[in-house]
Image 1 (spheres, rainbow, N blue to C red):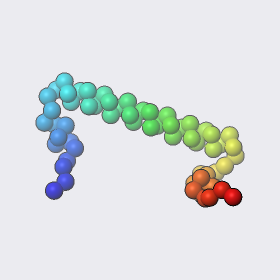
Image 2: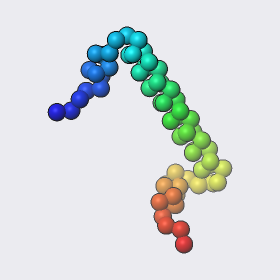
Image 3: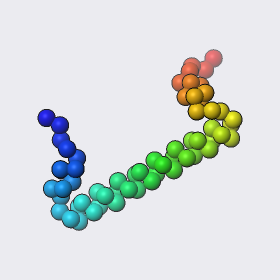
Image 4: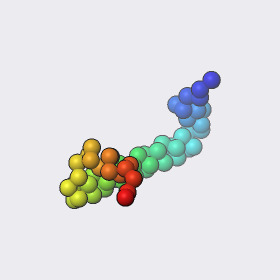
Length: 61
């Protein structure tokens, strides 16, 4: 039976819940920053999204 994350967080005391929410917000912000950096790097190289996905997964010869 799957565990619902929202239910588990609701069971925490308010201090723990606040820490979980703050940490989640920080992780989301970091992920968004990393995505922006990857997109900027692709633009600098002149690579489109589809080409970047294909080239990063293709073996190098």
